[in-house]
Image 1 (spheres, helix red, strand yellow):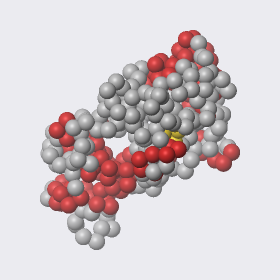
Image 2 (tube, helix red, strand yellow; image 1 turned 90 degrees about the vertical axis):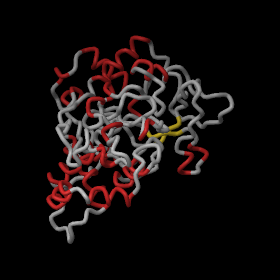
Image 3 (cartoon, rainbow, N blue to C red; image 1 turned 90 degrees about the horizontal axis):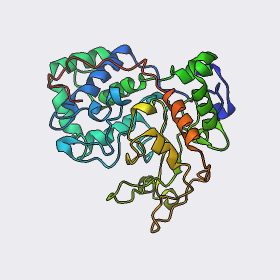
Length: 336
């Protein structure tokens, strides 16, 4: 129903009936289902030990419950695994927003030594030896000129599956569309605090996606013993973006603990409380950051923070959570 609403610049500014950005669409059911098999199949990793779903688990909001994700042979990944719900509407990927398309983004984990550890040549050789996948790719791409599986077809299938993961029917959404019994009094109170000019949560976590898809420097702390993460300064070379990270969507946020790029907060209360403790309070003295302009000192009470947390739980909707395959075409064991 959000497609029916008009809003300034086609983007929400905190109101209930605000429009969605343009989404990726037009994939066939066969492409989506092929992408589902690929997503859950550890054949995509160099040693057949992990799949995309190892770090993006459906039951954990398509994250993995770890502060730092793990790749092949248990190698630590640099940051926590972000959720992939509503990827069809997103135009910046990774915590540092270094990719603008899903096709580009997925090549990061596929070919990173610390993640899936594969390479394009080995990936193609492996899949082209599997008759089950050859048949599935022919079904998904019936206009193929030959039977050889291509990299672009792999990327397209995975993109198709990820774009099918839509979460827009939560209790909040039902309330926003006019069914006001969908939220109780405490949740409505939390929503109003969230949207207020005191808490100002909605200025970055803008409905209906609950992200403005921008980079922000908020000065979250790193876990003890971890070096400072420069964030988007690394891919951009822009020192004003030191310590900046993409504003994550809050859809299904109750399922995706721990929170922030470093997984430093174990629960939603602590993650929310961070924003009321004062501008830049967690930034080390030796680090010079240009903290985002609206991070200030709202001085929210315990009661107000608790109500915001109540509201965040109303953003949960797993209606389109996919079925995990009982078996994958490679014949390998599912690794989730």
